[in-house]
Image (tube, rainbow, N blue to C red; front, side, top):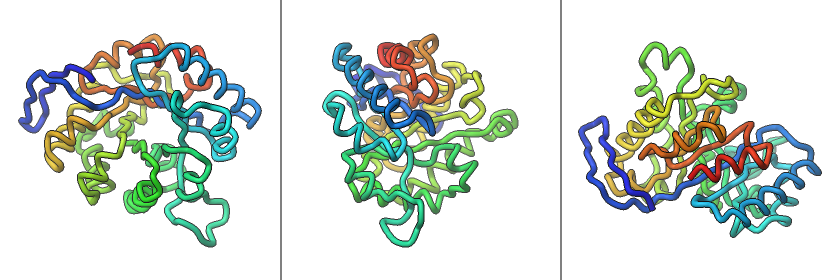
Length: 270
């Protein structure tokens, strides 16, 4: 639980009170590690998290090839496991795709959806993401849904509108009950893998805007209890300052999740 004061951009103002939303640090391994390397890293992280007893939930999202073997070697009461994507169909003649039922059958319980790399390189649209979200939820997976603006949108001042549109188009067909099962991750695309990071104030402003957007649709209780993670060159040296902001509930971590010590430096920032 966290004690939070938030002033939202659409005239929603909340007083100090305790919120029930979770602090979360999730690793996104992307297309990295062979299976033996991944098993070794997962075992190291599992042991480190078990020893540290951190003040947040910890998740690793790994390549499809790693899911079942890692599920068998970690304690998911200690370390959550997720996929980095799933298909927008449950089954059928879609060579090379991996469906939500397949992901769930490995023992994984989370899935990253809407990552900027999927949008940019594979043309994923809001319509496609709506299908993926529905299938993920129907199969008991918790989506970690990514949103964020590119550099041009940050510089021309349209970033709030861009992120609001991403949320509305992909998520606002969901019932309040289903929306409450989702974790959001704000990733300024210009800060992913570039070494650039949104300042804590920039990140907090966007997180508050996201929470206000949710509140306008689903009400204050749902908004209050939605975990919103920051992603974009989050590392041990800046994690504590970011996580201290009232609307930042953790991080979706890329490169720094590939070394146990770096990842735990972020986990222990809470």
